[in-house]
Length: 291
Image (cartoon, rainbow, N blue to C red):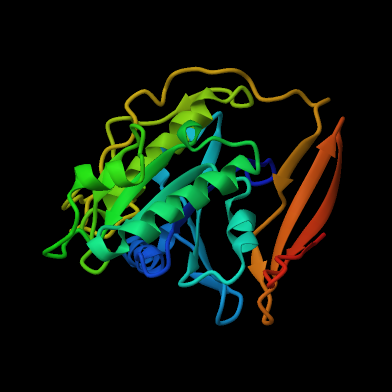
């Protein structure tokens, strides 16, 4: 669920890269982070120990425009490697606005890839969510292998049910930015359709920096392109909630302490009164969360 930061006039949207161990989730995020211009993205952060290690960073593509005068900041998350405690994924997936399912296209990983998709659906159902109702893209990673399964086989393997399925190779970067663009487009469309959002303004003639783009504001370094963003972002939708409705918003930047604890500043407001809180999250084998 996207959070409104009324102080900074930002919408914070969360995208989770989910998949089986060694499917290429961390390599994908690291590739994206390298390709985004430093002025458009925050630093790559990690949290946790040798097991259940969380990777995340945020970026704000300026050319996507604004949603009711709010800029959109995307936060990308994944868990690296083998996940020791299943509740870790449930914690990371909570409140996700978009999902990239990183599927391992190597034939020997077919069974674990299918099981990973089942786990994803089960985690979402525990929150009353349906994968088909969320912006989701299936990233068929390791498609550069000689014996990699075809796109059609991967779609059938994970029962994609009409979700976009894109071949990729995180080692070379093939398809990585195309996947990112697709899920960002889906999240922006969902924000447009939410009842809590007013109008959307954007220059729909721009994508997320085409190949060889000379636009100095493009978030991606020249030489790597991302597919175009939605062409209908200027449509109007409903208005923001009134002042009498309680609001929850990000109150500042998320920080990570030296001992690996995530601190999230929150602002709760109602009828002109606001109070600040700090949500402290520590991923442990018990996935405990202390407010």
